[in-house]
Amino acid sequence: MALFERIIGIILPVFIIVAAGYVYARLRPGTVRADMTAVNRLTMDVLSPMLIFSALAGREFDLAQNTTLFLAGAAISLGSALLAWPVARLLGYDGRTFVPPMMFNNCGNMGLPLAAFAFGPAGLAPAVALFTAGILVYFSVGIKVVESGRTGVHTPFFRFLASPIMAAIIGGILFSLARLSLPAPLLQALRMLGETSIPIMLFALGVRMIDVSLRSWRIGLAGAIACPVTGLAVAWLLDHLLTLTSAQRGQMYLFASLPPAVFCFIVAEKYRQEPDKVAAIVLLGNLASMLFVPVGLWLGLRAG
Image (tube, rainbow, N blue to C red):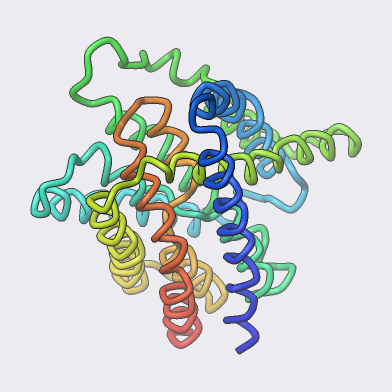
């Protein structure tokens, strides 16, 4: 019961902030899109990279000690995409819309606090390793999926590596491997700025909800189910292939059961890849997490 209350306590503020964005959009329908364009660019180019770098460069993260979980997280992200692609084709959805949200789940603002609650303070570092794996897969393979079939929007590989998000990932991993430490006030400032990206992304999601039609709710429901189901299926397979401790097994199943990340909507908005449908996937996916996250934890802890 305590776990379920914790999940509700994490998810309920999400929907309150989304609702605030929706109300704002209803009150200012004429200017809201222009307002949010600059905000979304700031989130993509500045705030989110700071969030990622501060998580990876912090002392609590040690990639070398969590290599197995890192590989498991990457395999779950890639495997979910491979399983989701035929689902998108079968249901008649654009794979560029449906598949990327299956690759990157809400392992940051939902996964990290849930891991700390379920596994204690020692559970934070393994959760950050899984978070890192999900980010790397999404911002390499996932972005390429979104860009596929388009003219004039392909990012050259060298420029892709120099993008703010990838620069933050690479820099954070290098800091961790070299065991370098930023001055505490600087790291705290980066974290404070980075953490502002979470409510901003949720607010932007609420703004986009004014464009969601009944047809979008269908793809939203399909994505809300497909994301955790494909993730848990891959986790079950990995459970039989990898040597994991009980705690690592629980972390892996928790990661696999998480809903699509809000950031997927920000990317869809940037590329104009049916953001209304991605918004529905993210919103319904986070609602469905009240069912799937307990299932993932039960599978992981039971397997141990």
